[in-house]
Image (cartoon, rainbow over the protein chains, first blue to last red):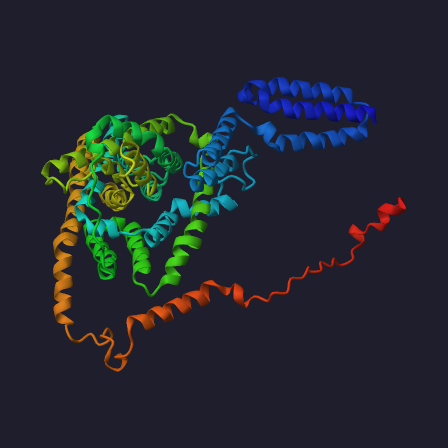
Length: 440
Length: 119
């Protein structure tokens, strides 16, 4: 009995020490096995325990402790950081917490071949991941966004739509940057869309271009970059409150920040109903490849504004989008399996993502200043709202609002910032369509 | 297209996409903006002309029969509806009682086993 307890305690000690040493699992594996053989020598005379011990050893070889690599441990820590950021700082918790949980889920070490991992055909996670790989979830999310969004500030002031276009310079600049860093065209296109600051669009485009299945004209297969791109897009979207304010303060003078805009005119219900139909037709005629995204977005908006389908709109903006967000978050998180995720490419993508957010924000801000040159006094726009042109609905609009309040506590910009914000969504979807039609 | 992709250097292709892409995004949004700035008011105006007089659903309420109906009367009606909806305390019964909370017997929570001090 005593011996049994000693063996068990030795084993459990081993199990708990393992992850600590696990950071260099490959190097330590030899010492670990030598320890276990020593244990075997001790129990040689007890044949009954021998069998049990073999079982335990086999069991141990299947546990996460035996299979963990440094990559797994790092990714699990990252997952915990995501959850922490979501809870503590309230950075898009609806995204970061599912993704963080997914990161942990995807990086639990396992023995391959038992249909456990997300990349193994037939596993449950793989089936859920199907919606990401085939680009099914993003349009559904867009349906919900459409049913949530009020386009009236955009209809009231259509010229603000240009700001949403200006911020898309981030997409194309990043695309170019990725090309210079040696990514091939489809991969660079998928990376560029991070600058659109729109998670669903980024996933949609990367699932079409950089999915690890498509074959390039020169015979090579494109890399699977869905995981890194989605994580980069979502994490920078969550970090919008950190990235944007310094740029705003740097580029926009104190005087400009205090500009008060005219309150938007009241928009009639008829205009609101016409908007989704007309915008759907116009934008998809221009960029048909973005049909799944834009079609669903405006369809959702039509459900909301038609006044007859409140039930459908309500489901789309609450239950449906919640369900899809859960599945999307967890599977995108789980797709960061360390052996596939921790590569030089991912690091480059993260770097490019940060740059693209900066460029997009600057593009929007500077274009707003540029527009002000042509606008009459009293009709001027507050250049801060240019920053909301990167989509990241509605976070960037909120950041603009708080930044405006800081320089003038009576200046409420939220309503105005929503216009470039939603047009940023439309703009990035169009940009995705264009990139897809060029490179798909 | 494939031949073209092989033959051109990706960077120059990238610049082409950069410029055309930005142009297209901008032009799309400009068209949308122009439409909602100029096209929509015209459309709404035309719609108004077309449907003038035909719209039977929205018609003025005839005030002929309500000549004696003054603002005071409507104020009284409004006030009474408001009172009725907001001051529902009056309808409540004035009898205050302590509700008896009766727990159903369960041997799991029975006190007697604890008192007898044996299992």
